[in-house]
Length: 591
Figure 1: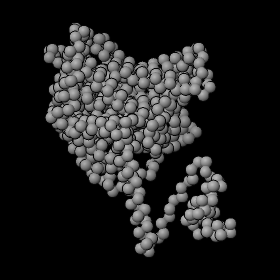
Figure 2: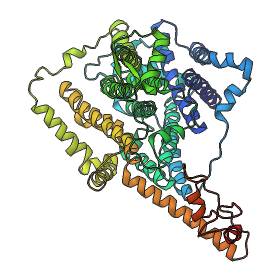
Figure 3: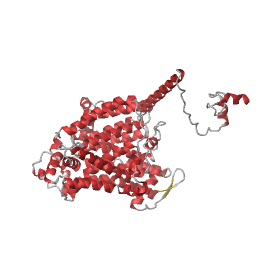
Figure 4: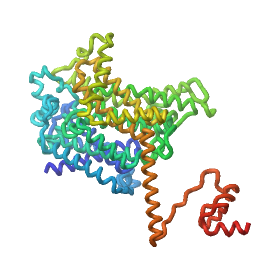
């Protein structure tokens, strides 16, 4: 029975997540659609028992599972309306299988990754929660919730002066309640869904930029980081927060790449705009992608409230790109954001007029209003994700309250502890013998490749700059939060918060110019080897290899000079001094 309910919950997650993707008109490759749908479904499910508690509805099996089914149906109302015209194709077409070639050199990576996934899943199922932070907070609250049918239960009558875990987000509590009601005594098997979905998404995202050998290597470096892998079967907030934070930044860049970041400075065949196109999105436009990124970051804020600080620090990037493109002539970002935002909140007013680089009029006041609306819709999910669990639930529902203001550092004018915290993060958590036990050699490899790119290439692609900016923002914010909140200690809270940096480093490495050159060299060597094999097969009496025709460069088709010098072979009739086909020599003789 528990396994049947587990599968039904997976279907419910998939339907809920697909409904959210449909609302944002996002269409991606099936691998992305499935993984994102499951991750979004888990996030939606984490709100259901929490909202039932806010409405003072008894938390039982029928109410929880009935609410999950109802939410899944409500999120898919637009899809049901479209079914009158398209039928079941509305649900099946986005998941239509595409051709995916499995190369032999990918199999070892998949075997190792599969083994690590199996161990993590087994431990999630077999081992009970053992961490102190879980037992003194979400796990115990969830157990009492199942017994007493309310999240505000007798657990809060205990003397909990030594911990603050009872005041943390209902994200874990809600998911634990759902799976305990489904028949899993330890809950926590939901973490397998998050772990596997993010691993598949990350591998495919890296594979979009790099050769599969390098994509598999980076995936292994990430999964084999000891500290991160331990949290794939140990329920705490940090791994899930890392997942949604990374996804939010990933789609934020895709939204920005629709305008200001459209591949400038990227290597051929690996531009940022190309990476968006390769996602096979039925482009909802840059604004919808940015608002979707805001939703993902809002989920991350709901999981860990301090993420709100990080989200705010990405507003300058959005404003800079939007203003820069508007001044240059009204890009898709500048115009599209206003279109969507105006449709939601009314038409933006007109302001002072300027003139862009291509002569197009730019309404300065309208652009500023559009920027404000964009920032509002991007930040709104994070504000809601912060307000509901921190301000509303703790201050107005729980029998005990948590005064965050009393925990602030009273001597903010003394900056010596701040500088000391930044130094400790680098020397104790990012580098040194202790860091190797936490992250392996990932930070050393990333630092070496960054220095090499800085010295030998002396430039960074715009996508690499975005991910480097994200890494720096997280580092600076964590140091400041540790300075402002003494309870944000170094060896526990800050260490787990560094989870957010690790996948960002992987995306930077996937856009490092030296790594991209190595990827292109491997691909070229692989193609050259395939051609040599084809030539050898012809020489050995096999079937003749067919060389694919290459389209001529733009502007040279039909040129007399090109026709007179170079022949493209076959019976194409493009004669010249060098001909690779049988018919070109006869035409030259006639001339």
